[in-house]
Length: 106
Length: 122
Image (cartoon, rainbow over all chains, first blue to last red):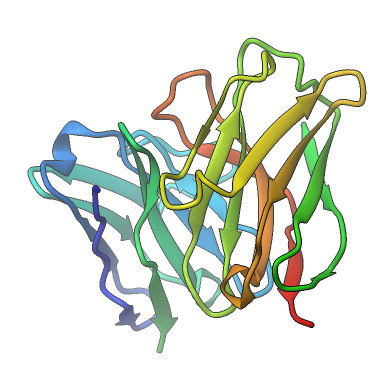
């Protein structure tokens, strides 16, 4: 079955850029979606189809996807961005989520 | 904006069946444009897709759960439901219902319900 690998944690200072990776075999051939989950809340999509943003999501959130790695980039990080982030793809066997990355804003 | 709300028992005994319902408001499950899904999250862990259903009743399931799961849709009540049989403590989780963003199978989940915690314990 298809596996998505994320780093357990990423730390960044306010105002800096955070990059969260999602690794998978030839993931560049798939559409990757990213979710933000704050404590006690349901996930919210912040990037879909590799690099599109839903309305209401700041431009600071962007995505890229090539080869075996997809990346969620958060520019000018704010304290409110501290959350868990999950990548997701669809495979022939169904939907797959990465293990999640906890973003800590120092 | 469509809204989803999960409901059902918060406590289920081992070996019994977990049953949850997702009520859809400001939208219709009787739509050819979307799929509807169940996703769960054990405490302190990541997200796991359980299964997806179309308004016709056609469903797909996570291979790891397929033998124990049934997802159904009731268009007259604008709801869809999850049954998970023979539960164990490993099935303790927050259960979310969600809608796919588009009809495409590879599309994202949006929106999600608020989630409901189901604990499996005697």
